Length: 259
Ligand SMILES: NC(=O)c1ccc[n+]([C@@H]2O[C@H](COP(=O)([O-])OP(=O)(O)OC[C@H]3O[C@@H](n4cnc5c(N)ncnc54)[C@H](O)[C@@H]3O)[C@@H](O)[C@H]2O)c1
View 1 (cartoon, helix red, strand yellow):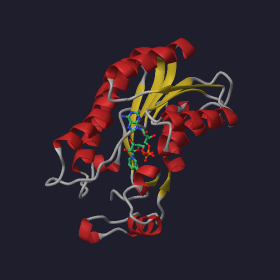
View 2 (tube, helix red, strand yellow):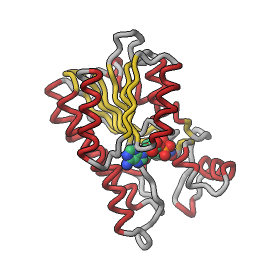
View 3 (cartoon, rainbow, N blue to C red):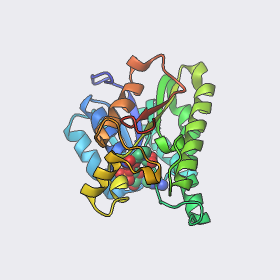
View 4 (cartoon, rainbow, N blue to C red):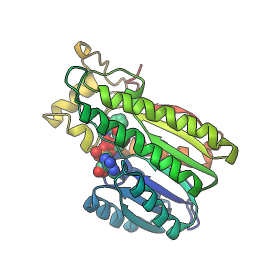
């Protein structure tokens, strides 16, 4: 876990209103971090901000932000800099998934995936890097779909593959400042994004675990769906000094589903 003291570094988390980003924010809050929380869901962000304060965050700033809008991201980072000065960490968890395969994906949906999942991360890294202290850490939540082809996830997978690559290239450039950049690639994780894919929660969970060879999905060898906290544990490890010699990595956290 990241250091547990009132002097713990300030960390910015996107997608903080729900799912994995929320779990990261609350885990960092428990270790008394100062937090800048970004999301386009203003009400959800406010609720998570309150929870983060309750569980121990040293300071919380919530900044409603559309990640696909470069000017909005720049303004959010300006606000964050005013509150915190330099940042010790950046976590990107904002993302969208609109299921569609090759024949049905629309150009609008393709562009939305790239705008949010890929260009949104570019905005964050490009505008966030000058705000990071030397030795800071960046963690981008991508997906195991970046490396494992999935039916009905063409635009999503392509956007995530680009995101994983851009994060590692940025990390190579930032290494001379001691800034580490790593990618976490979750598999099926029990969040609103995943539940939206299932017509029925119990059935959806069972199928994700068991797999479906007709859809070329082998299932999850560890026999359970990830909780958002499982992914947050890896994100917080990569932010911490315990990971001080780890950079440019893409790490599956998927119970073995990418075998
Ligand atoms: N849940 C899974 O099974 C799974 C698997 C692999 C990867 N992921 C990735 O993990 C990340 C978090 O997903 P989740 O499962 O927690 O989903 P989620 O839908 O619960 O949370 C995503 C958050 O991102 C925010 N967001 C979406 N678009 C935004 C935008 N343009 N600007 C600002 N905020 C925006 C949403 O408002 C939401 O709060 C995503 O990048 C997703 O692709 C999720």
